[in-house]
Length: 477
Image (cartoon, rainbow, N blue to C red; front, side, top):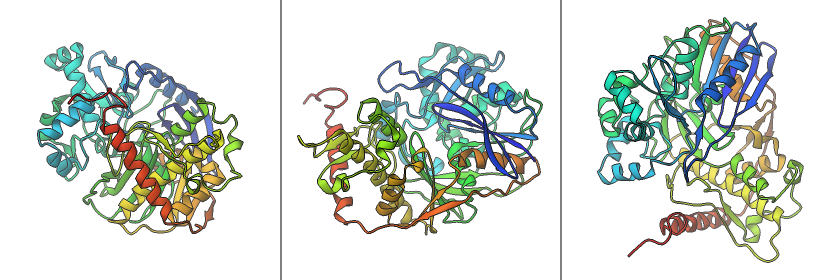
């Protein structure tokens, strides 16, 4: 069986053929990011759709297709013309931070957490949908006519490409509108966020017969990228965990049942047709590879080989710390006011020192997420990692040291696509059991004071953000 896996990510859309022998790339195209206002991040929906079409055209001779999506990125379109009436509002976008703050002040967070399992944060789609209804006149008119469609990007792709307006439970669980226990849209949550439930797509299984595509192959899997990565890592038992280092860093661990996540996110891992769904706990760091790319754009380094090894000991041991809160802090803090910051700069600090601190800061943020997970789940060793940063040998060793755990570094960095393709094969009635080789990294002991030093820096970054100086100027008395 040959499956085509399309990984529709934040910065690019890529296609891979997955079969019994492994996985190989067949097409890739980057797309633009738009920043029309401070805190706004958008994509052109037609550009994304064109990228997916190009990926389908690149592999016409496949048995089935799976598409993984960005999770929380969303938009609105006309049910009749199927034309988008808004840009894609990307998961990084925080235009609804004030809306979420108002809902918190009105006391709605407990019910949102109890039903959806998520905190009130602009990261999730619900407040973005509400923003569209409040600010886009065409959306209001289409809602009045019963022609408005609101959805995450997967529903838009499926509507346009497969004539199947639907989403899956993994993606729906990232909206703040799906009740995790019923796996259906929750009327009370829709009321809280001002979202007309009739405009939302039906929730269907992650895999199975999901419609026909323009290349003649059936769509047989549709899933959030991070959950696809978890499947691609080979996670099948409670306690199996992975960390994907992409634009952000996302850790997921399988659980045996739906449970309270505390400051983590309980979510659906996957829900195959006719099978009880698998559950997971999710914890994200907003800026990982994006923080490294940002530091490169600042001119702190030129070639990737410059940051594969460092001549000096850890920056944090020399009093230099970076807090990667470039888009705020996600789990377990959920603090959008926090801002990225270096602490401990001196006249002897070099550009490479600063980059080293960036890599270390990402590792310490991930460690905060894993520590929160370990309060609820027994994590089985080793923890599997993938993504672009897993190609960096120095970073892989440092993350093992900071976590104090064995790390498994897959020989295949495209595990998101692998998992997507494997689920597509299962949805088509087949199986692709390919497991890439991996190498194990053992942790080295590090001083316990390092974690305390990072914590102090992170709290200082949060205090500065709360002062209002970093974003809106000084607050009035």
